[in-house]
Image (tube, rainbow, N blue to C red; front, side, top):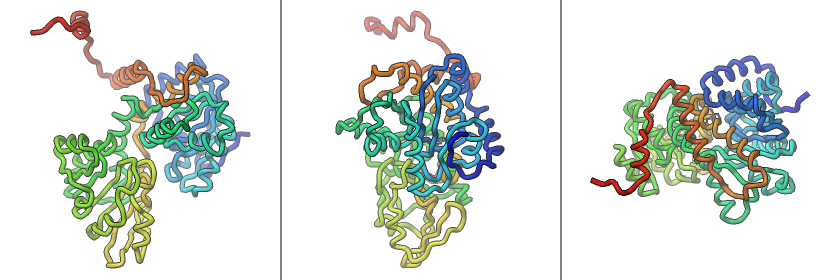
Length: 419
Ligand code: ADE
């Protein structure tokens, strides 16, 4: 009997079909899984993962298990769990899973603690919550941890802050920093799944709407591109001059957020920072403005502050709340400010998670191969592995590219040939 805490084990049949479909789109991860079956690089390793419990994550868990690891999985967000997938992970794949969509904060942390009760030597995070717990309440366990890996920008920012103030005591692989992760998952994955989440929550027409994207990092630019593709007039707000300039030259209107909120029909935050939309911004919004967040944590806009301003609230549809302010104006908030692409849609499509999770699987293998050799710190996945993932992804798509000739290679490594 394996341990688990999920919504309903009877949902497993639907979950398994969903896992299999996602798996059919994850060709690079599958190649790694096939090698893992033969080589068992994670033999005798207990791996604790705190990731969004989706069909894509299930395929990563399967690959790690086939690589020899014993696993325990919990959710990295209270709203992102696919309950049928969680059921199938337990029933069909024998993976201890602790995740229930909509779990409250106490249950969320209880689940994280349960994963750490398995005494993992390797941990895997999306947002750095396990690593944080390991460096605070559970720091007695740190000496048995070989290392960890981190999926997302927000988590990597937290880890670098821990490293800077001397808190970080283990090596952590910043999977987010691989090119085959952030250039694709953050951009195309967030772009598509955020639009998907907004549409599922509201069913509004995007064509002709003024769509404000707060933040022009990889996620913001992916979202901006896709919103434009749906016919919205896209406005970008930024604090970084270089990114703002890129947005201008990519053809977007750029202005301060305090002005953009007055024009917006839809606003979506994508910054990784806190309170980028404050109560003052809510007061300036037009009647009927739709507000969403696609950043990792629900701190990007001041939802609690907005609620304090309200005189009435109604849940109109799943993930769509009407908030009436004192002057009668209505603001529509999606998923209470939780990440809209996973709360209201299914997160990034499997094709793109394929590369992210190929990086995760190889990062776990790298940590085990380099046990006791890496100092505490934040590491990137080695360039050759990142390049190999790109190559395998192209192959899986049936796309061939050119090779440098000998003369070209020589030219690129020399300096004495000019005009
Ligand atoms: N992060 C964003 N989309 C995801 C997905 N589909 N599965 C796991 N983590 C994700």
